[in-house]
Length: 218
Ligand code: G6P
Ligand code: MG
Image 1 (cartoon, helix red, strand yellow):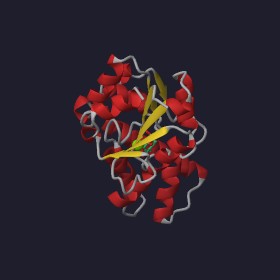
Image 2 (cartoon, helix red, strand yellow; image 1 turned 45 degrees about the horizontal axis):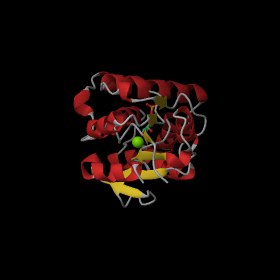
Image 3 (cartoon, protein in one colour; image 1 turned 135 degrees about the vertical axis):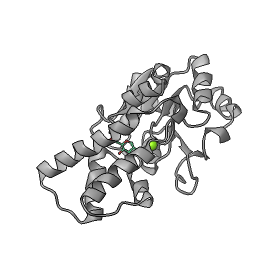
Image 4 (cartoon, helix red, strand yellow; image 1 turned 90 degrees about the vertical axis):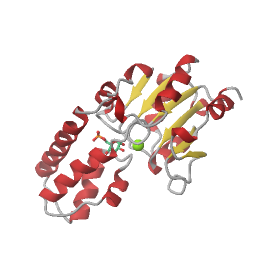
């Protein structure tokens, strides 16, 4: 079956925002009196803000009241927003524009499928918003990846059957969500970590245009 629509995750696929999420979560952890490492931050990729805070508090052995929990969610996001405020095109990951241009030139529908509630402002900051025919983000879903909801909504918005969609993802939960949606899953990152993906590339510089044309014209 040939591919006729493409869905991109945001964080870790289009831009490297994991480092900003990390700095904001680490600041909160330090304020609460414990360390938060880059290795622990790996667990947060593709995971909703709420779930991240639950994991962070588990790491610190902290039990929070609902009020404290809500306050820390806001605090982390305010710190994160300060970092993304300064983002520009230089933060787009290598060869992302090449892939987007290739698809755009052929009028192939493109969607974003992200857990982030900050997806739109980030795409605006890096001037990529206009490439996307549909945006599905953390504001639109009730079920987190690995549930396929985010990608199924994206396919619906692109008026394309799930089996004809391809998903680019850097998170294990995201690859599982794509597989659960019966879409073609392409891992962007370490193949050992993303072993459940149907195809794997370290980054877009490793993925040839020939690979894309092969999938589209099959
Ligand atoms: C992405 C990132 C996660 C982040 C989530 C929510 O999936 O990989 O690390 O927690 O988005 O982001 P938000 O911007 O809504 O806090
Ligand atoms: Mg991601």
